[in-house]
Image (cartoon, rainbow, N blue to C red):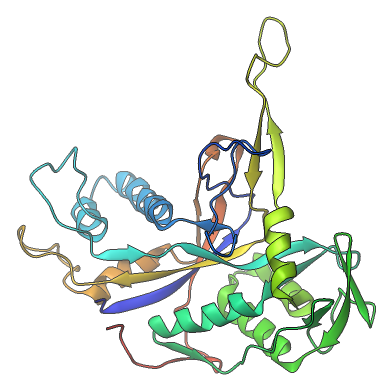
Length: 323
């Protein structure tokens, strides 16, 4: 199937609205969610479109020097390249939620996850030829959360209060190792992110599955949006609606997979001969910011992109390609 693969982490710096269209519910414009978990996601088509837009914007600044490469990586534009019919060499999966910020009585907020989200990350890492040394802990009871062993800023020693819900707190060695791995690999390594890397190592919590699902479903941001009538200075008729967003400081990830570029439509551009070349070019976005989803004019969807590229003691390249 695919010859190369990488994990791409997406850290939301502003609230993110990847919309699922209009709704008849209380929220007029809800966000995209997985059908069976209700976890927020960014669908693969939107991820691919946002990444392509970043490269096309850079290409215009470089006077269209990479136009051919973009065509072979992401696929031809039907309006511009009507005679070309081939698939792009790169594939993106849905961006799945890994960490969700939840308001806490202590420490302002906690980075929350679940055993299911962590187990799925471990499985997805194998697609990218990565293995990790940490293990996912057993799921805590319905009234318990698991946290790091020492130095946490969320618990008072025995309990945790998230939103309006109290949980018993239990220290866990596995959570400490997971927090350290996330700080070293999933979070941006630039200096401006030192506080947030330290924060995840102090406030990571593994929640019961049902509690985590409820938080990601009911603790997102919902904001009223209006349009003002310039003459009456009141809300225009029918212009009040409610919009849901994924809060800032959420962490998602997507698997980026690549094949060799198509060859049936002429020679491939120089420097773009193999799947490895495709991945190398796409990962030029690593450690940079781009915009995902809607509402770009009001500052939503600013995302920091970080590819899992480097090797370390907790993530070793297994040397296997996807098959």
